[in-house]
Image: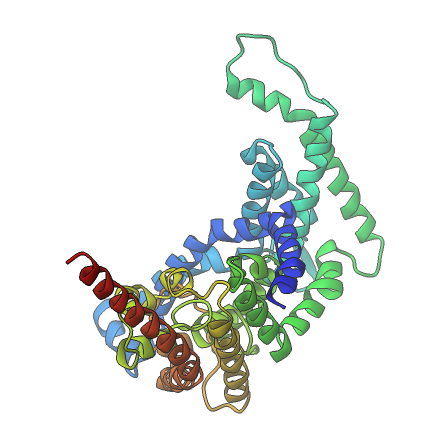
Length: 437
């Protein structure tokens, strides 16, 4: 059975993992992730979930102190669509063997060509760009623009439609002329795309992409089956030695990212937070201690297990495990190709997903606010910060305990197996000692 699973899953996972578009989506979001995390800290400080926090700092810094912190967070969160276009086009251009900076530059220009540039001010229309087109609602337009613009650019380069400069010309000058005709072709293409959409009922490419693609995908992604399937596949792939999230994130990251940004905007505006399922839901409430939610497993290894192998591994892995790093467990216990541990390793994140989904939908815990905490933030702390409520920490604690109960019978089976092997090895050592006397 295990070999059949491996024969079916390995080729599919490898194909998805090696797909240049999906890989570039993942890498592109990783490029802008540090900016999101850093500016999230400013946003969190400006809205820290402690009563009287805002009044305390207003008394010290004055009323304008929130504007200082908002300026930092808005510099990223109001332009996530544009930044996504940049990151993905840079990664895609690099993965396609193109000059990455040229790829990113032409994609940004293409995105701006498709962006509406007039705002209705009373009865007059003035030249301006609303951040709604550049922010979270423009992410899917940014993704498509990045991929299409780089493909057109690559097509022109492959056809050798470039202006070759003579030898001795500085490389920077030569590269700029190499990009001239491919860039012109991309700009011309998106120029006609803008004209085409202006003649339709959608009026803009933004409206078309949002209504036909982004809104439906958000609806599908913001569901319990979607989140459960994500964790099921990620955990299953880990059991075969494949980094599951690197595969599943290629498909789900754009959807979860948009849902997180929607929550963040609503939280900033003091409005009702709209979505249960997003990146913070996955990171903070379903996989404690890394894939498989192995923090629960580590607790049993350190407190109940008796074999030296399991206990020593638990001592080595507990500190990184608290911060979500569990490769020592996955490859040291191991989890990989271990049918005993594979069952709870897959089951616990799915159970956490279902339980968290129910709890959030019933309103027992406030929805995650969209602030991007690092995935290494320890549980209890992350539950409080991501929801602004101590109930988030309580939910995490309950799920860790449930994980302990699920893992217990399976790790005890493995622990007893290792204990028998250790005793047999000790007996063998004694026999060897007697035979040498």
